[in-house]
Length: 247
Figure (cartoon, one colour):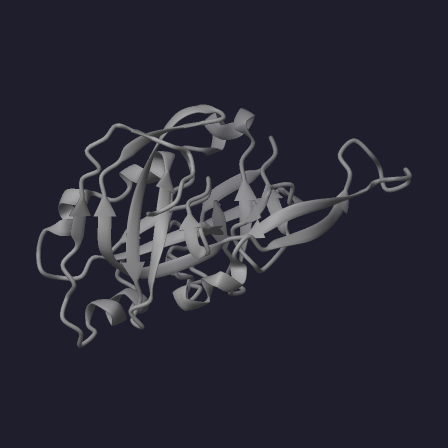
């Protein structure tokens, strides 16, 4: 999850699996909370959903959470939009973060490790192509995926692969009906290269918003261009490979 602080920046936060029953149902998106007694640690994940920090908030058994004043001037949503025409700059780009090696103390030798991480990107655009879901076999078993294409105000197209549950976050029937643009926000995507083309893939942190009422969405919907009718592609198959790239 991402936490937007009143100082104007946001930070990545995680809840340990053992505490999900305690805190998982308490936290609701868009609600302002006061959070006390937590730990701040260096990230150990292979990707960074936000750029503001290399650290994450970690819940503990002593973490205290209570709803705060909902009238505080804190936006309900915070995004780090990356222009689609520039995503090639982040293709397979890795940063190396320096952190303490697990199981060691600061006084022990050889306590430094280098962690490869991918900086994620948030994108916004209107859907031009949406494909039906299909199944794919990966190393951890069978999953599902969906390919879509989006464009921004510069009409720069980019392919996006939505893996697992994120494939269900876009209703193909809703996307193709009507004459208005369907504007989608896709967060925490990973930029990859496929046959010389930069594309996006969802991650475990990805969320999808359809026609969210924010300035960036309104700008796209109110542009002078004629709405582009969404093209639906029915794959007509139930099995796919695991390359995970839009075609």
